[in-house]
Amino acid sequence: MTQPSDNAAATPVGAAATPVGAPAATGTAVPAVRVSGVTKTFGTRAGVVHALSDVDLTLAPGEFAALIGPSGCGKSTLMRVIADLESATSGTVEVFGKAAATARADQDYGIAFQQAGLLPWRTVAANVALPLELHGLGRGERKARVAELLEMVGLSDFAGHHPDQLSGGMQQRVAIARSLAEQPRLLLMDEPFGALDEMTRERMQAELARICAETGAAVVFVTHSIPEAVFLADRVVVMSPRPGRITGEVVTGIGRDVPRDDALREDRDFFAKVTEVREALHGTPVTGSGREAR
Amino acid sequence: MTSTALTTSAPGAPPGAPSGADATPHRRHRGLGALGRLRVVALGLLGLLTVAALWEAYKALAPEDGVLIGETRVLPRTTDLAMPHVWDMVRRLFEPTTSIAEEALWQTVAAAALVSLGIAAVGWVVGTTVGLLLAVAMARVRVVEWGLLPWIVLSQTVPLIAFAPIVRSWGSRIEIGSWEWPPWLSVAVIASYLAFFPVAVGALRGLQSHSAIHADLMRAYAAGWWATLLRVRIPSAVPYLLPALRLGAASAVVGTVVAEVSTGYLDGIGRLLVSYAGQASGDPAKAWAPIFGAIALGLVAGAVVTLIGVLLRPYRRGEAP
Image (cartoon, rainbow over all chains, first blue to last red; front, side, top):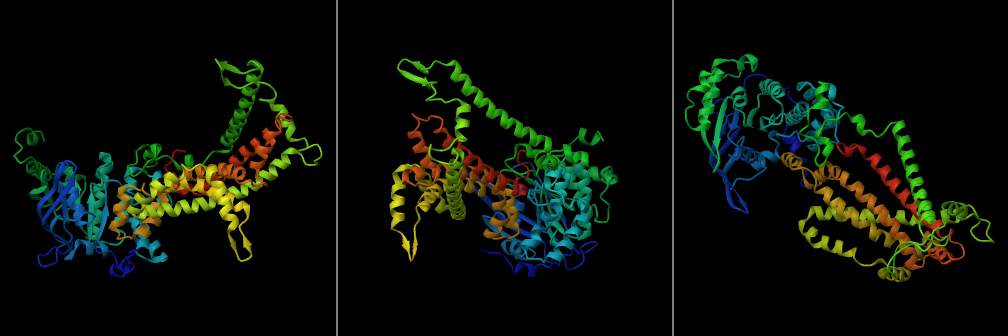
């Protein structure tokens, strides 16, 4: 009924070449995400639950922020509020200077969830094409863009397969390709690797880091894995539950130009940051064993 | 990669699919091989033979007067009148319908069954269409679901024989220009009245079955309600829809037969059932012929829905094979 045919015009899809290189994360640019004073409460049978309490968060264009915290800390809710899948009870959410609802209507972000959420009756290619199709991109352009995306996630040979023929990791790669379909400048990811085994997970992390470097998109990445957060993010935002709020931030200092590979995972600075995030999570310095054991 | 594809569990597997959790190669979903199909046919025949054998065994072993507990007969009499031999029933099919008729009994039954099949098909199509429209309306507006669903359930509690004559008498008064309401249409309307119910309920359930993640996704794409209906809700309703269509087809057949009897429609298999039952004292095997015809009718209706299921196979991925 509210088919947004005009959105296709607002979002240049598949037209321009993929932006390459480090994004301009200057202070003067409009922030990719600006969350200020956001509170979110749910009314449940047991009473009112404070999912988010007075949350402030600003994300520069091209910045990669990981939201981390124990379950129930509202990290997923925060991401969903930014995506306008939930509305904040109070406070304001802006995406590229626009209200979250407008940004959603304008397709300013791409999104991926813990479950790939592919449509099982569609082929891999048709799944990736879904957002393009919904926003009225022509058949030819669609085909070209899908080929390009599948190439990017290394699934060109699987275009004609159905999701049930793919492993969990491959399904998630399709979901990531889909989230990148309209070249969003912001990616919202809710534990996209949460259901994968450790080895697949590490490979996917490296792949995501490469893709983000290629596209220059800002990322809000929800995770409950400390190493994953440090490995991927410029900034790790630490949250705590009841009520959900931001309790700390750790800037990883690992530049965009540092390749996200296995060498980084063995790096001393990497471990130091992991420890720092862990301390921020627990609220107390982790003494002894943790550091010594390494 | 392929080996992991076969063994790792797939988190994105479609909902409501117990076996869909494993990424099985799709050859399993593509139906059976020639050998498997042969086995299905053999098993079907074996089932038929088993029923016939049980029938004859009971007839041979049980007492003539059936089995009684006190005054109550719990198992039927085994006389030729109550339970004709299987071979007598089959032989009767190939004998003339009446002593003066040319036609074999099976031909009479088949002709009547075809008429009933046509009426049931019309009833099924009308009922399915109405059921689907109701389901979409109920899925669209909550209030409609709350207001309508109880009535839909209630509609099925009205006994068919109560309103069948009413439908016929209303129909006979309908006349549009030179067009008159034919009697068979009353039968089809009653059949559709039975057929729409499982479709409406099943389709509603199916339209509400899409996963939350797909709903989130479509919302994130700023897709409207109709786009979501078309691209997500209807396709994910298919696994619920097929059993509903099957039930609807069975209901349409039963509804047709009962409505033929209760509206006094003469060309269908319903009348044969009644009139041959009346002749059973003189010709017991003959009464069974229209029963076989009715069973065949049900099988054809079921087969049609199975065919629809084959056509919709892409939307049933992840269903148990």
